[in-house]
Length: 161
Image 1 (cartoon, helix red, strand yellow):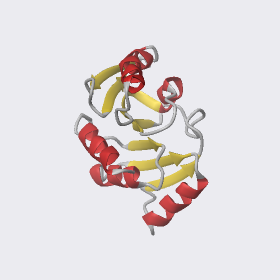
Image 2 (cartoon, rainbow, N blue to C red):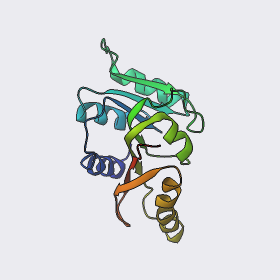
Image 3 (cartoon, rainbow, N blue to C red):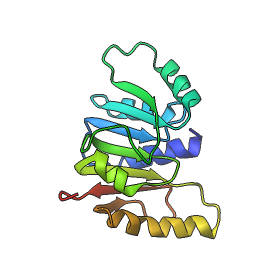
Image 4 (cartoon, helix red, strand yellow):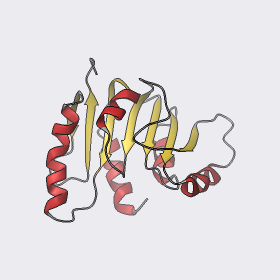
């Protein structure tokens, strides 16, 4: 995870208003974000998911002995998350195509979502960022933090989901 993404994640985590029990990072790469989340939420179980089996192997190698099984990594696709319905309190997506319907499926009602946005790269990125709240709203999310120009969006899944 590059330094900008880690700074954005740290800023976004400050907007999370409840301590999560279960956290998922989608696009975890070699585990920097998931390990940061595990430190930030010391009682939570943190899962990292990435398409790259090589990155997942590297992430697993970084956690060493974890007898409590608090942090774990898995290879998989964000379009079909390998987790049960209503399982996570917090989901962080830092890369890849956003799948709001699948995110809604794995989040508990009232759960929170952090989307880390790509560094500004022109009009297209701004357009995507402006459309994001509407895409999330259609799936029952309400944006709670992250104004235009910020590197993240935080949203809460409504109770009806």
